[in-house]
Image 1 (spheres, rainbow, N blue to C red):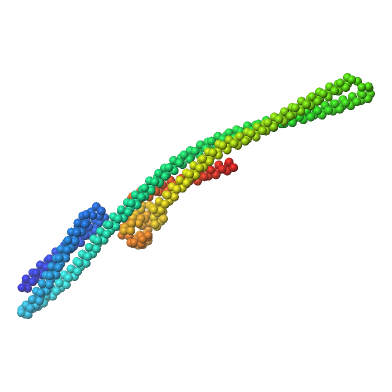
Image 2 (image 1 turned 30 degrees about the horizontal axis):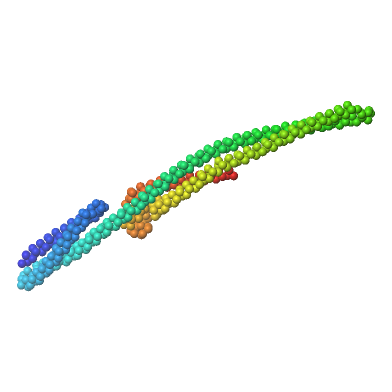
Length: 425
């Protein structure tokens, strides 16, 4: 009877050892499945089948453990029977006590091992549930990221169209500015030629006035001499009349001389009047030419300059709208730590926020390898490189440089306009 019970215990111990090995194998499989969790999207169906199979195995293990408990209860009954047998068999009482104590110890060990197995099974189930939850969370986050990235791509397409339009308008505006510069240079050359011709005409007029003044002075001097001669002649005639009787021929001579002098005086006055009229005519012509030059300048510059300024203003407004759109998009690509455009972005798990890789390494060093998100304060379990966002950020950096070049071009055009206004003024 004792040998039968010993054999049963050995058989039960062998069964328990096999159960331990099965549980260890199950734990190893769970560990392997946990290590393979990185590719969970590709092995989702396989993992769910394995989890369901594991649940079935766990259920079988629990049923086996219940059977073992039932057998342990039977062993307790057999122990009681053995105690009765010990009373009958006093010779083997010591051996029976030792055997009974061993059975009790094994029962305690089995109970502890069963408790540990239950706790391990519950931990395994919790880990599997956590893995499933993380998988669904990552899947939802990927879906959100897809929508987010598609919206960003649409925004980039609209901004690229706006940038192409702005570049075309900028080229047209630059071409018109170059043409306006050429027209301005030609007008400056024309103005220079006109100034030279006006200066030449002024010089001719001044020379003519000087000649006229010298001629007038000569005539005045001649008139003075003639008056002196006439006065001397009249004196002589008066003296001769006083000495002699009046004679008709001398009066006639005097009358002829006076008439000649009057004719010369009249011709001289007419010549002076003619020269004065010519001078006034030249002055009027110069005034008319000056007005015509001013009118042509206003006509050439004002109309085109007004249209150019209107076009430039519209272009500036469009470029400013484009720059504002770029700044709004830039906010979505700023690192929460360094507040600049993301460089080599990494996305955190499970929160899904994104940082620069260097900023993430700095955070790890500052917190002694314990990472947590600065935005939501969630502990970081893992992070991965976001290659799609890296391409978008690099493209956005290039667009940022183009935006800076556009802003510099606008400022240069404004400086050119200011210089042109100052020169015209």
